[in-house]
Image (cartoon, rainbow, N blue to C red):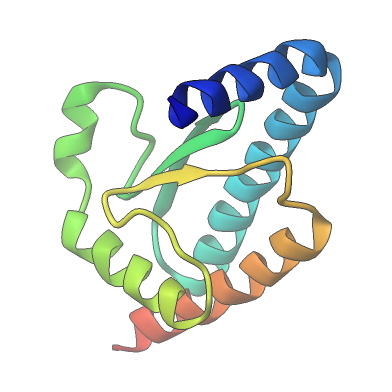
Length: 127
């Protein structure tokens, strides 16, 4: 099947180029997390972000979200509204807080994301 062949090709490339791909994904996820934290803090929206290689999870919460119990302090509706504002500015995120970066996300995409986050935070706080 085509999907199995595509998965095998992707895994083969990831294994072959892992020394180049995974550090780049880790750096991009770290920059994305920093963008969310910096812009939301400056705009007055308490966004907390946990991240690892290529993936992050963001929350609108008053403090760090380190344990499952901490997620109950998160404002899920506020994050959904934030996600909708981001989409209006051309950045799609999963409304439940999951964020992914790929090898195609570079400096230009991350800076465009910074501008979208800044505008989305400003609009959400103003509303």
